[in-house]
Length: 275
Image 1: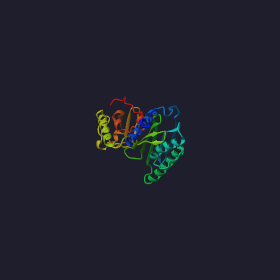
Image 2 (image 1 turned 135 degrees about the vertical axis):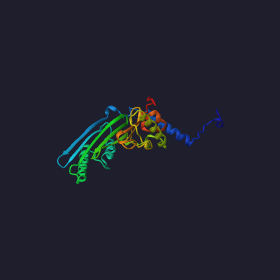
Image 3 (image 1 turned 90 degrees about the vertical axis):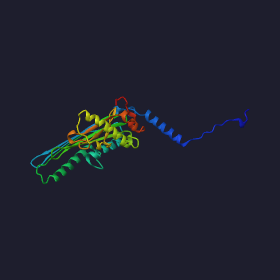
């Protein structure tokens, strides 16, 4: 029979720093193992197209509004559909509380725009106004969805102008992901350098001869493809109007070290794209 003083009872000393690291490691493993396109059944995702074409042309008005939007309609909770739709509508229609019914939102925006057009043209009997809005889902894999909306407006002058609104959504929460969600802290300076590097390559290819390189900084207007992150800059922001919207496409393997490994986007990184 062993004497009690011969029994060895191990003692564990817990280091708080080590335990925190272990926690984040396990959390990362869960994120990776539960990620990918299996998080959501992609076949369950459905979208609906909404269109509006309103034109008034007579002796006192020359007004045209065309809206074509693809919107999420099935495959996730209604509350998430509402959140995603709100993120799309707010900047596009310049509202803080958009209507949940897309048809009502489109008609309200058209009526408001025509009213403003009527007021603005009081000193011009035949002013022209043309607006074309297009919105489409550009990428969807698992809980990740990218959306792009363009807004062209011409109200006189030499030419119209186009704005581009890019979104990345996490369909598990309905949240719109921003740069601070995707990247680690202090990403701005190194990412600016990478964007300029790839823009210089585009410049050499003859896409556009003149760029304002000092203005090339992360602008939070981005989306992803299966192999890359793409930043979109509207006319005048980093190049003359004639160059149109400039898109800078950066392979994932070029920015991987800057990205937050806990981000939903990190699950979909594909290093197969050549730098």
